[in-house]
View 1: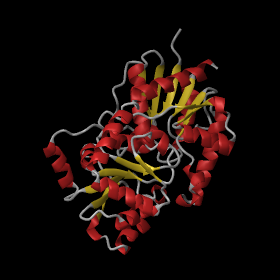
View 2: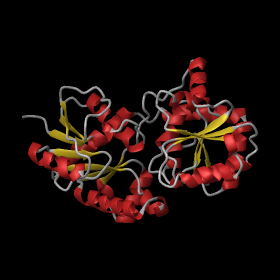
View 3: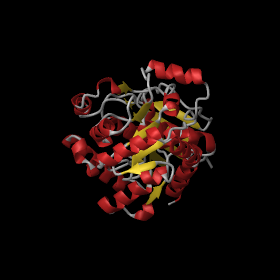
View 4: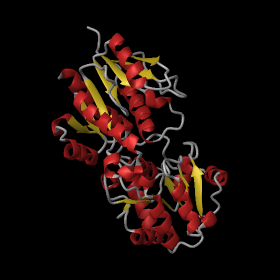
Length: 369
């Protein structure tokens, strides 16, 4: 008997600049390909990806390019034709045409926690897709206990159908030992003084206005605040706030940081700061820890679950507390050393192989149901 065919919506790995759900999709697919040589897999992409993980003989790739409505207009009909035993959607929505056995990963419910951070149209899209995913999927993966709790509380999801599977940390996130490489990365991005570093989309949900205000009032003379990431919706007011406070060149907007530079810049930061108002997981926290950065993050949503005892936690609404924490991190080398050591140990607990094995167990449960 032939092994079952598992279809995977791999559309997110077609994105060149991977963050968040794109990085998760790439890494979990790559890890599944490494650990499982028995099931057959077909990866469906919207165009050819810029880079692919190593794929075994049991994995095939189907490119189905279409500018819009790809999930329902291209993926769904392809599934009807190919007749897989199971569909796995790691970061989107289950198509209207889908196998009876489907598994979907739901990353967060940020549109409910902070509706003002999304357009009305986008909120409606996310609301409808979440409801559809919960209805259509045989099993659901939540990337944190916090997200699972949100699904149960907000939508009445059956807890028995929702499994918690944490992310891993990508292999490239590790300390950069060569001081020349670290110095070159700093020079490329104009970081000519000690700095706090944030990495993520520049958008309201990330709480960057309060971070800028906390930085302005913190006792950290001579330090920079470097904000790295793509500009998202309503990023302009964030940049304006730095100008209004007269911070000038002390706040640097670096844009998207390539993975080639990110580990060096994380490792050289006085601290990594991630004061987000809401996260379904908070992968940047673990990536920073793995590179040797002391971490300051929020005491809300999934962030305490991910950070454990390896970060300074603050109320993200309390600008004074955030300013105090920045001052402590700048002044206290012993605190930074302790957080680095705890961070290395914490990040080591989260691997993509572990994530893939737990994901495969959920897929096999859905196949066997």
